[in-house]
Amino acid sequence: MMTLMQVLVPAIGGLILVFAVVIVIGVVVSIVFAGGRGQGSQVMRFLLGVVAFLVSLSVVGVMVGVLLPALGIEVRDQGNVNRVATLSSEASSQRLGERDSRSGETTRGSAWDPVVDASFEVWPHATEAAALRALGRRVSPRMAGELGLESGALVRINPVEEGPGLRTIQGLDRAAKEFAGALGRVEPWRWQTRVVLGHPRDDGTPTLVFRGRVTEETFAGTTLPSLRTFGAIIERDHVKVAEVASFVDAAWVMPTAGDGLRVIGEVGEAQRLRGVYRTHDLADSPASARRMALEAAADDLADRYAASRETLPKLRSRVLETLLDEPQLQLRSLTQEISRPYGELYRTATDLEFPMDRLTRMASELEMKLLEREQTVTGTWAAVVGVIAAIVLAYLVLSIATQGYYTYTLAIAGLLGAGIVIVLTTLWLSYSAA
Image 1 (spheres, rainbow, N blue to C red):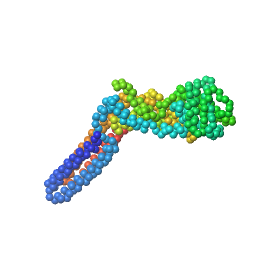
Image 2 (cartoon, one colour):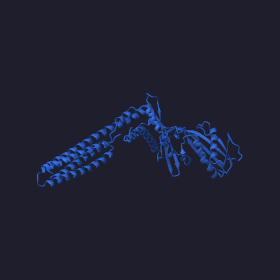
Image 3 (cartoon, helix red, strand yellow):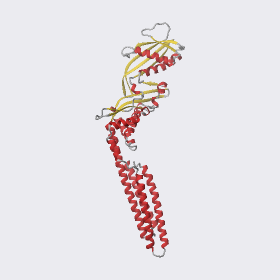
Image 4 (cartoon, one colour):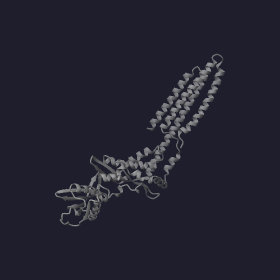
């Protein structure tokens, strides 16, 4: 890809050679037509004026060279646009493969570090196992501290059906056994656990009542139709310890090695891009967490399918706007609350699909617009170079015709004219790009 400066530098070099030839011709003409008296001073005046003018014009040229990269002007190949417009499924698969090895980097952030789940209370959990582990972590220290149970104590775990009107979790007995294992793994040296079905004997052994229920709740704008809650209640000497942990069946929420972006649909059909995206950092509100997850999706999709780095920001913005305006593209979404002693934070995972043809069309349209603008900019600056060349030639002709008497006046007028042309052109291009 050639930049406009790479095109202009040889052209400017050629113009300098032309200027040198014109100067030599001007000197000869001045000497021939100067005629006697004051001939030396007239030639010197002419040469000094020409040198001053060209040095000033060189400074203006350097300014133009600084402005052009600032405007991001490049001469680009039409093939980029054609490549985007005819993006095939094979090319798409290749683009997906370019970053599949880094899918964890693009979808996982500090918000999903296992330390977060181990250190703070999460609601709701994404799996039953996570909820049971969290319940065990919360109950174990309270049994030792508030109930005063000694190390090595035997704790019965009795699964009990919830009160009337509540559906019991299927497999409550199985869950109770898994909770017993989770409780034992929290502090293996502290507790012995035994699951007792039915009413336990009153022999003084501490009994932990393990309960479960299924309810429907709405959280962060999302309905949780099967929110499952486990409860652990244990009482001793009129001191009761009670903890709960809730979860939904959403194992897809947690980062895994295989949840990168993939193509859905056969070749020739309306193919879709599907992937799971998550907030990178914990957010201060559910709305912010959802937006951060969608921003992660827009970043990834735009980075994969933008035809150039110049169109990348605009493509990212368009994809994000589409995801915000069309919630049906989000197949499922879960926002979790992270409770800390000093406030609540949130994280979101969303599973979404984006039509591939729509994404490639967006990328192609942006590339075409960029190409049209760059062609306009290139033509405009070419015209500016032509105007400046005309100013230089006019200056040389007039300086020769006046035998150098008005060299400095003509130089100032020429520089002002060139400066005005450059400033107006720069302002117009900046305004048209906004």
